[in-house]
Length: 407
Image 1 (cartoon, rainbow, N blue to C red):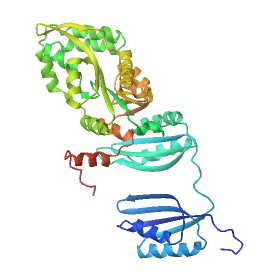
Image 2: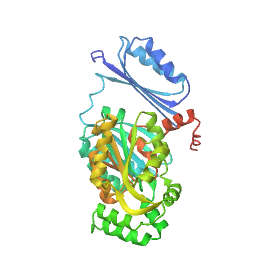
Image 3: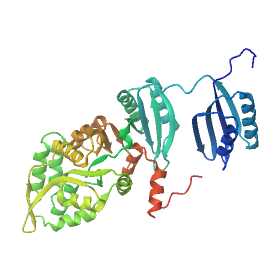
Image 4: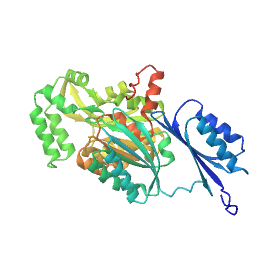
């Protein structure tokens, strides 16, 4: 260095090489001898390949520190770079977001496209971390410098092109606090539609399907459609409800989702245009805190073809979300709604985070984010919870065996 050159104010020390026990402690023991202050640290390990970056203040004899770190690096068989600078990290720009990307598989072209669209908004990717590697690949990007709403719109369009799922959430405290998750039931929490299963029991599946089709074409509203379909069930023995419940299949990952989030203090609710005779049993089975659905009228052990009380429709689902949030003591901003159909649109719009799960195109376009993988527990990645954390918690209770490592 030229004798007149101004000495550096900070040093960025980067070590790269094969990971092994003791690397980090050895490096910091070396730094301790020079009385520096640690300003920032970042460390990652990929397939036993370690990258360790440390930003420190500069001691009086910074060259001696540089030489000492390089000797340590040589002993550890690691590459060392020491970059001189004049300050701490630049303050991050306003507009910080968590961008979660899900793929099965996640291809390099998709990552390149998503990163490119982030750059197009003028934002910067500050950090990337893996949330899961199976049965989907999930990564989370910490992004700064863009309005989350603008970023969400930009990335939603690219996600559709790349056939991946992308969720954008503001980086704030709500993501780390207790939240309420409100889920639709048919074709979301469970596979299939309960009313169609009941219609099959009653021998009127085609007639019920015709009414459902009319509602989907906008020819009749939800309440009219539901009442017409329920009328077709008149005379069905109430024991058919038991057979339908026993035949229900939960969406893959449903139990894991509920179990994981309840460990963290989350509350759960289910809301359904279906029937309380089924939803209340689901709630009891999974430990769901709240449930709302329509009640079938029963007389002499058979369905009458009528409903008891008002119909829980699209607006009713959103009202139930607000009611359950108040009962849970959480703000509307701390609610997560999950659904798949047009009947869920008001609920998805009202929630702090609306997730379209394997939903119809109209619903995907309206929701905050869409998840199109078949695993309901993929939602935990959107909430900042990794697959490794889920497995570690399950292992403590002897519930699962971690998957074997990748070759």
